[in-house]
Image 1 (cartoon, rainbow, N blue to C red):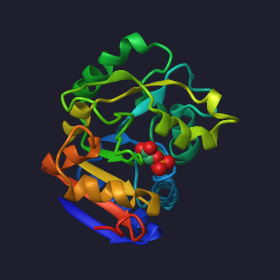
Image 2: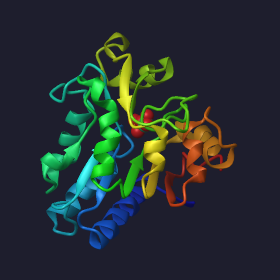
Image 3: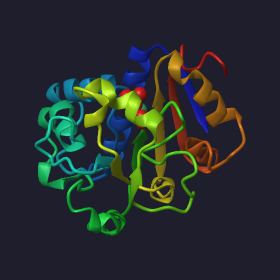
Length: 237
Ligand code: PGA
């Protein structure tokens, strides 16, 4: 486990450096994408570097972690829309090689793991972390052996995400997410956390027991994981 602590601007740059190294070594790498506020600085940095010719995604593939059930990719709160707006439209990736679980055809959730395997597996999975320790939408109590599946969102997650919707009633009640096992199968993982609201859960994730009650704590068992944490989120370490 590697832990990098710096300002939020600097951790975005260092995480971008990690992408540069990976894509230099393996231009057709399979990337695991994440949504939320946390990766925005990283995505802006990757977009800037791609425009400057410092990195290319043209042979890469991408699989995102999760999607809201009931929202299709044209909905402005869907995670497909988020990825297009914040990353894919600004880099040279082939959009046909970017995948987000379907929030509409949820019967196909288990096909997502098969598609990842058929692509050769994820080389580097990016993660944020929920205030309750979720990774993807794997809420506390999710079995570590889970693959891509539909979940009911906790009230804590729905209220954390209500800021993006007109009201909490509009926040979907369910999502489809890669499972914990899907995430753990990635050859490398990078988790980013920013801000004091994440300080307690970062401490529990890195220094607490490995428990399904703190889904991200499973990463202590991953052979190649890096945490990129800003000073506020690292305050209790
Ligand atoms: P955030 O979300 O980046 O908006 O804090 C992270 C998450 O819930 O996984």
